[in-house]
Image (cartoon, rainbow, N blue to C red; front, top):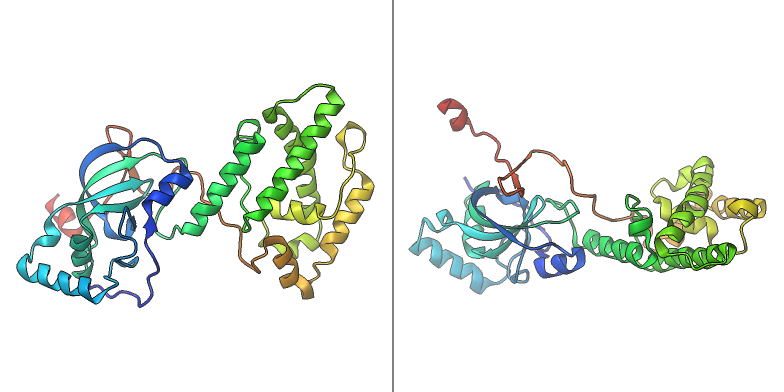
Length: 310
């Protein structure tokens, strides 16, 4: 029985862009494995020839697949070549064999796997928009010293330009902090001080207000930017948030009454109600096992015939 597929599958993810934006590590070849078809989400060089369901985009290619199936009914049995990034796979060679396997309704396919280490979680459902925004977040963390000063902090946002605004806040605080100490403070130290004495207190103020709850889809950095928008000036003694700042920052949130939520969210994200988008850190995201060389391999669920054989 042929597997039923949706009429709109979207696009395959381009491996070269994923590799560049996420700064993947060096490849390790880990042999031939049976991998789940639904975790194959991209291609190395043929994203324009197949959609995300691995259906051909042109009549010529569709006709070629019919010819291959007629000439080699077992073509889908031959291993394909893929690159693995966390739980996701990208086809290097064997696009047409995979397309035939999908058409036959196969859930698994044999593949020679080359694995690329990453600190981020990729799997079915990962979008290129998430990857691009994760790249912007990484750049923000590196240029401000946040990756060294607060290595575990994440700053997901829906608008790329917002990272420039957030970086300006970090850099302005670094200047003020260096002047207060009468020495040049390194980025890691100043970013940590910004996070502890400016960012976290302002976010806590926002989260403590009833108004902030109507902006539940806004992330912490988006709330921070909304609170401080249009506000400037020195901190109080001992780096305390000035009372006048708190009053005016709350006024920014009060403008976001329930009747004006769409407009408020548009100011924060500049994309209406679109939520902040960034990839999770790689970790324990479900059934996986570690191969002898330390690379993650998605485990195939036991089939009924496997259970019968035991």
